[in-house]
Image 1 (cartoon, rainbow, N blue to C red):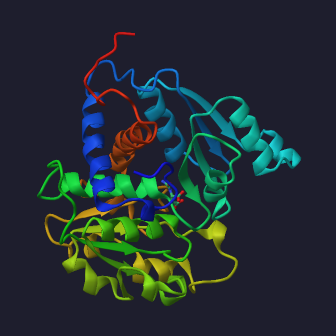
Image 2 (image 1 turned 120 degrees about the horizontal axis):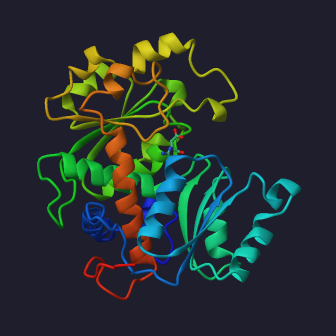
Length: 322
Ligand code: NCD
């Protein structure tokens, strides 16, 4: 594995399968009465969040704590960043505190790459979402959820060969889509993105996926359908006529869900816009894995931190009684 996790392209098939297998081991710890391993004791993980987050931030925090690391949470709001402090000076402060890993979410695409290659910090860097660029741990937890839910189960060593995954919605602004298309392809899945033409990025023909504008045609051929949030905060123009029109063409409701094969699941990274890309009926149905994805996120991030920080002991052999 590489030293940093900035993009899904940093991962080979074997790296990705190793993370999924390690996450399985980590997941078993969540079922124990004491959900803690001593593996990263004495290591410091800094969560550096320049952009709002609910799931990802608490997920990384829970992951680091379950591995016994010391966790420092930094959010730009209320820090000296609001006084104009640069990424460099913030990074140098973290370095002075001895951060072994920095988990960064930033509104600018490329900020984690800058942090990893600048020499400002010595620890490893994990991208927790940068602008519209990438969100590799989200893609890993999505792949993990798909592997667990679909027939082959969570058998160690397996990838997603031949699985048909459809990603629907605001592809243009979605770092989740970019990381997922790449990682799912690395794992052998066949990926199709579906969106209104205005929300399909320029250059999509170079992505390792098919493109469709017809959701109803793709649904019956999907093993998993991933619905994406319409990211209003990143839109500076009108990309579709009305919300109602968007929901009618690209939203998933009960009637549409019925077109999916019986075994197929509905996914959503959250936060959901109920009534827009997904109806409440679908979001609350047992076929929707949104809550499971959050649970799985902790196991996957434990695996990533464990593997990047090179825990010397096998991941899940020892139980602590602290
Ligand atoms: C996503 C994100 O922040 O990129 N959410 C997440 O990490 N769970 C998707 C989104 O904001 O719509």
